[in-house]
Length: 184
Image 1 (cartoon, helix red, strand yellow):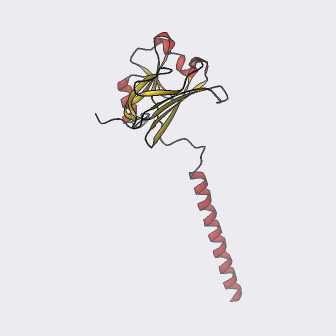
Image 2 (cartoon, helix red, strand yellow):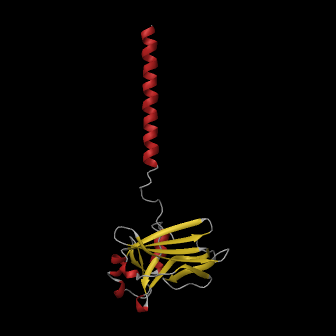
Image 3 (cartoon, helix red, strand yellow):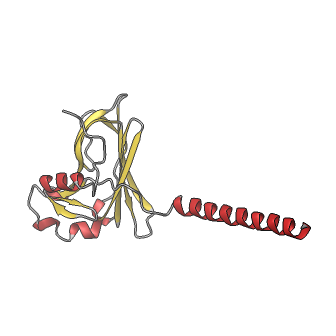
């Protein structure tokens, strides 16, 4: 009888250890920091006259507090950063031209280099407590930039689309704007 009780206790300990290991494994796999984000936040890019880069946020954003565009090399190291900040409370913004200060913003970090020389662009939009980031591979964007219609924008991982096509992507939850849209 003593052997049965000892064996029973041993089995319970093994069962608890096994269950604990499974829970730990599930927690580690479920919280993988290298896993893809649940939501893809993307705006749109377009080359304007004179080779300037226009960035569309995907919506009219009522209270943007800061915008930052980081130019990265092929090793994903920053080579240049452009940043603008709004006064307290933020400013309305739906698009901007890289290197040009939008109304209601002040430049804190000027653009020193040429955006076309970057391998990737990282675009960060801050609105109050919210911060969203997006990236774009410059080469994939530039491949067809000159042949696109004026109303089309490049959306990373989605390709070229019109405003209506972008709204369809948002409705399908394939992408989300870089800010919480205004209700206007």
